[in-house]
Length: 159
Length: 251
Image (tube, rainbow over all chains, first blue to last red; front, side):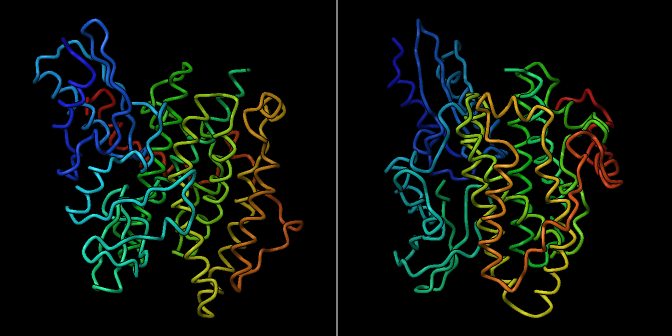
């Protein structure tokens, strides 16, 4: 008997194509899973609208479902439940930090400008950092400089 | 709600994003410093993603598929403002255009995120979070450079004078304006423009730059209804070059 929890556990296997330590579930791009009479529906939302990995992630979810013998499935990508960085789980934040990427600060309501510029260095935990550019190697990362340990580092952008 | 009015609005939004996205992408490999090369390339990617989101809404309303709409129309069928189609020029011009355009787009998306039309509201809600970074980028550079050396200030001031008539064309009033406002789709071009002037002015006040007297400027209109500068068609030809080699190819 297929359940939502079972599907979510299977989807833990599917990682962000650019950040192999972060599952799509922990990234928060899987917005809901429904199981009805053996048919599995997975709803997803992209982190950034221009994310080139969007299609790849969707196919990866389909491949994983099929690998586990789930052939009756629908995977949809929509803005119905738009992604924001608060959707990244605690486990996901920890994984990001261990990977050397500063996790986005959690926020209430809307992120303000100060927060976009703020970051904690993932190497030495200093807050004495400054935003160098909001545009890094992928759409979801910004580049910062740590004045304490004098290293450049990347942050998963708050959105 | 009149579908034609909605489509008219969506085409403007989508075409602006697509064309400016392509102009921004021309900085890839040519940026004045590596970080700016990456910034303009990233914003290009965002904007083309945004155009896809709006073309997808149009497709759901019965228009042709996004690729077809993006790559098979000619200049007279495009609804973008003339501002976005102008060549990149020097970095000062691209930066000023980016500043004037993205501040306006941010306001548009903020308003549309409260739209009575739910599909548009959802897309705008998503996109406004991304455009916030574009605005942060533009405003930061304008503040830095607009209060730096004499050369930087002179260059930006002259780029501002050149871009402003075209920027005012962003707010060309729709033939469906009244219907759109009455139906609660958004607050209309005048409201966008009023808010835009305030935000642009607030940034410029922190610099040596002066906003030219608007009363003396004739806005460059027509872009919203297919009248374009000589620069759009060559850009479209270039954009569609690969698509046209084999329009039926599967990618």
